[in-house]
Image (tube, rainbow, N blue to C red; front, side, top):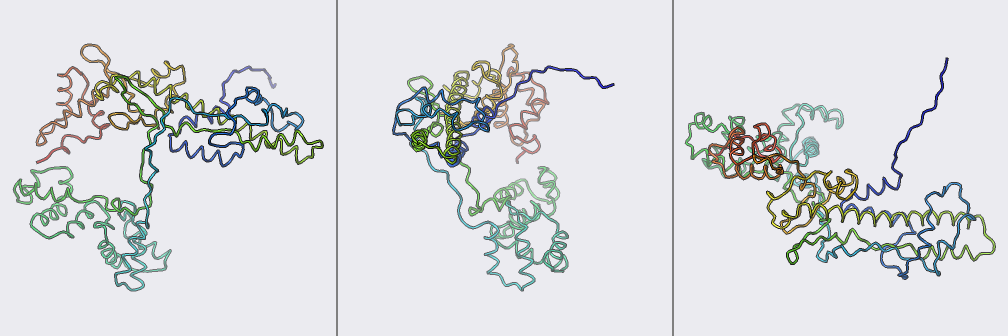
Amino acid sequence: MLKQHLQFKLSQKLSPQQIQLMKLIQLPTQAFEQRLKQELEDNPALESGKAESETMDDTYEDSFDDSVDNETISAEDINIDDYLSDDEVPDYRTQTSNYSPDDDEKSIPYAAGISFNQYLINQLNTVYLDDEEWAIAEFLVGSVDESGYIRRPISDIMDDLAFTQNIYVEEEKIEAVLKVVQDLDPPGVGARSLDECLIIQLKRKEQKPTVELAINILEKSFDQFTKKHYSKLIQKHHISEEELKEAISEIEKLNPKPGGSYSGNNRIVEHIVPDFSIKIVDGELDLTLNGRNAPELHVSKEYSNMLQGYKNAKEKSKSQKDTVLFIKQKLDAAKWFIDAIKQRQQTLYVTMSTIMNYQQEYFMTGDERKLRPMILKDIADKIDMDVSTVSRVANSKYVDTPYGTKLIKDFFSEAMKNEQGEDVSTKEIKKILETVIKNEEKRKPLTDDKLAKILKERGYPIARRTVAKYREQLGIPVARLRKEI
């Protein structure tokens, strides 16, 4: 028998407006500018710059009722007077007193020129090749990735030439044409592996004993070279330590990613625009919000005139009623967007201000060892916001400080206890670890066990596996790979 029962359930859901606000908060300055530009293009009721009227009518603000269902509303339901204020649409300016004009901001640079592959094709035009060889060479160039490598096996390329180009050749023919491609610039292009890339570059150099030794090491002992087994290399190649050192010096001058050095690669040059600026003024920290985050926006005056015209019309046609509905929707959207930007500004400023005050000692000195342990919840509790909101501010935004431009999330770190039982930031421990490794004897690099012992002697009792984790997070290789001769 089918049983029926009622169940009451409470749940919280974000409105579409709240979701859009969270997305706006998450955007860094450059992405926010693009979003603002898109909104101005999509909504003709929204305009940038100062409006003719500087008045603020509360009646206009109150007229936007989110509870109105735009699908069922009729033109007669709209109180036009609520959208008009002395024949002027009021100016909703979003400027505040805590933003920086950023007079010295530069436009985002772009790389210009032909593509990397086209650059290689242009060089092929200077080489004599028959029709079949040219087709193979063009196909090989098309297989070169951004780093300058061909990472596909010759057998796969042979099959693709047969199926897509109707060219049936043996692997030997492709290998021969590949040598032509590998003679192009930049040196090392068309290599299939790192060792081949380095060897190609060395063979383009003046052949002196040091270069010849470097080639010999890469051809016969590449694995031992990458693992820095220097004693084995000395023994195997019957050379002195000084000769090995000179050969390694030649190899270190080479470019492991020849494609990356081509300036004509059509990619945007990464250009960081700080979202905040912190300066020390008269011994006090001064925080400003990038002026690009504080645009001046207002509702279009033309829309006011259109509504006024509808109000004054004695006979209202169906097309006029449809127009009023459209205008109402655009006005609602414009009002919400302006308010959302205000909230975004306030959220960004309050969050960064709290972070700055929490890490005041660091911002006054620039010493990373002064960074206090700080997690997202610490800031969220102080500003009475959700942790996710703080995360959105921290993860994608930068602050310009007297010590350089920093990613905000880098100021957050977990806490560990030192020998005195005090909470210290893991950032502080990592900084000390980095300094110890930097000053170590490179002929005998410190193992993780020895590093843990040194940190313990300095008052930071952490395990060897924790040292290994921090070392990896810092991008520092194991002791064996840090060895030098």
